[in-house]
Image 1 (cartoon, helix red, strand yellow):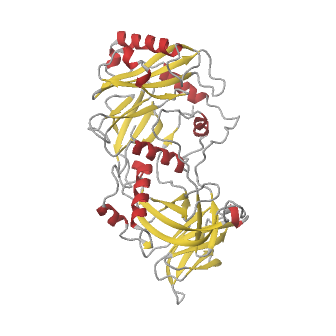
Image 2 (cartoon, rainbow, N blue to C red):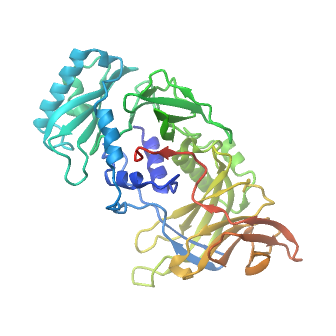
Image 3 (tube, helix red, strand yellow):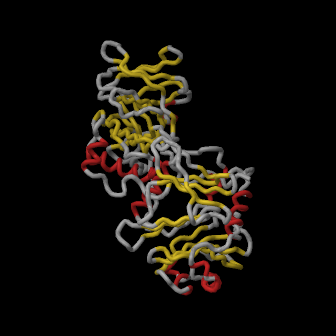
Amino acid sequence: MRVDEELGRALAELSSTLTPQPDPYGRVRARYRRTRQRRLGGLALALVVSVGGTAFAMAGTARTQPPPANSNESIAPVLAWSDKLLQSPPRGAVARDTGYVRQLSDVLLDAQRRGDFPNLTVPVNAVKVLFVDDVNDQRIALAAFVRDRPDPATGWPSAALWLVAEKGASAEKLASTGSVRGTSEGLEPYESLAVDDPSGPGKAIHVAIAPAGCAFLASPVLNGNAFQWASEPTGSYLIRTPQTQRPEWWRVDCGKVTRKITPGPGSLAPKPITDAQLATAMSRVRGNVKAQRARELVYQWAQSAGYRLTALPSVVWGGHVTGVPTGGSPSADGPSVADGQVTVLAAPAVDGSWVGEVTIEPDQPRSDGVISTGTSFTVTTDPTDPASVLAVPIDGDAVGGEGQQFLLVVTPSAATTVRALLDGREVARAPASGSGAVLTVPRPTAGLVVQALDASGRTLASAQVSDEGAQGTPETDTWNLD
């Protein structure tokens, strides 16, 4: 898998705050996260924020360790769908060669029992080839390894192995250690792989597979309009090559139930941001943002968000602020406050809303190694309009105390004051400068209206507080439902 794509997917995992419905499977699945062989190391993000002399510290939305699953949550439906995938006939054109499939299964079982796969050493009683096909110049296969008994730590009865070799490779070559591209502790109901394509730098092949009887559909990325789903001719699996990849979303239907909706691979920024793209992204910026940093942030977010966005992000606001608390009391390791840069980006999402990211970077690293982190938000109207107000909630538990919420407010340039109203009554007020301010308001923020006022007290613009999290996406994963 390409490094830039891995980075994008890793950032998406770290920054994702979407839960479209109660999702015990999502939490359970996090416990059994696949251990792909990757060229990208672990990522960690965190940040601290302060504007206009008011400061606060916050933790990022990412967790390096998932929370323990609730003991009352059952993954029985997930395991049932996993078994349906295990029992499915092999898919792919090469899989029609039953002799080759049988030979590959036997060679893989012998290799595993010899210890050739260091990430897959549990006792195994059978190997089932689920997919094998020649895609462009490569032979790609997915095999399930059925354990003697379910893993005592995870409960999964089968593990999974993705293999890639040259087109037409023998069973022995495809089953060799050097062909392994990914291992998974558990065979999930939906399995996928991205692998470099030798046709050129930055090119990739993508394969996804679901249980037999399920059907893949795809739709081009549309801006706020309903998806236009069309069935994939391959049915229960899907292949994308550099020649067929496009901005799109994928869907998996099993019977009358949609089990998965996910953005297809890629992003609106397959290459670093050009000068022309940067000029567009900065065309309505408020405050002060360095061009190089804006270029980096636009590219990073476009990569991580992928086709959840329908246009490249715009830079909404930026400013250097002082007195940023780093969390905790002063120590020999460093001060408890610092100065830092805040940058706000926003982009239109596939559902017609606007989603945004706030990034805060202290000038000096914190004593605990924190470099920067951010928070995401969703609004219904275009926050890049220079005449608009944007109020983003930032978690202020660390310094705000119970019942207080910090808002990062972006204002029209003429604003000198911001205030918050609840049922027409003013509940908070703060100065604004450089089109930015921080406002401390009582929780909850539902019903609050934030206004930007000029020096004469005239209201320039008003808006409700944005929703927390990047909610502008229809992603779905319902393998946990009966």
